[in-house]
Image (tube, rainbow, N blue to C red; front, side, top):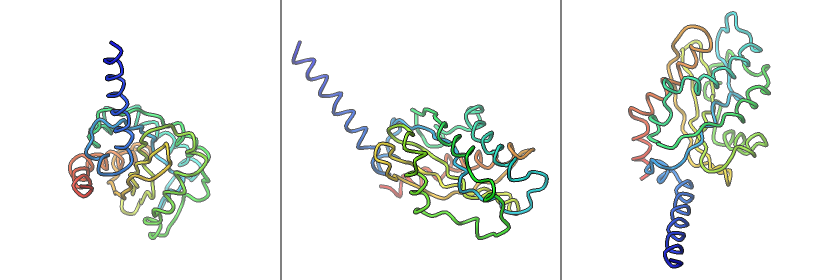
Length: 214
C-alpha cells in the first residue's frame, strides 16, 4: 500500500511539474488546452482615445473603462474567452485591473494624434506587468488585454493580448490585435471591439499563433 501511495504521489508531482513548465513558453501554452488561465481583465492605464470624444469627457471615460472591464465577466456568455483561446480551465480575477483603471490618470486619455494608435511596445508591456499593481495578481498563467487605443476616427480599438507567468512575472506571449467597435452607448460600443477581437482570435488568430510557436 505504501508503494502504491508513493507511486501515485510521484505521478501527481510529475503532472504538477509539467503543468508549471507548460506555462513558461508560447509553444506549450498554445498546444495545451488544459493549462489553467486566470483572466485578469482589461488594463486601460496606457490607453489613448483618438478623435472627437463628443459628450463623454475623460473623467467619465475613466469610469466607463471600469464598467467595460466588469461587462466582460457579467456577460461571459457573449465574451467567450475560453472558446477564443481554446482553454477549458478559465478563472476570473479582475481585481488588479479594476484598481489600475480606477487609479489611472484621466488627463492622459484624450488624443488627436493618430500616431498614438501604435504607442505601446514590449518595453511598456513589461513595465506594466512588473509594476507594483501586478505583484499580487496571483499564480500560474494570467491573460491580460492591455488596451492601447480607442480610435473614434476609424471606429477600432487596438489591444495587446498578453499572457504572463505570474509566478516569475515574465512575458510568455504578447500580440497586437485590432477590433471593430459596435453597439450603442460608449460602454457597449467599445466593449463591442473586445468581442470582435475575441471572435477573430477564435476564428483564425489562435491557430496562427499556435502554428507559429511550433
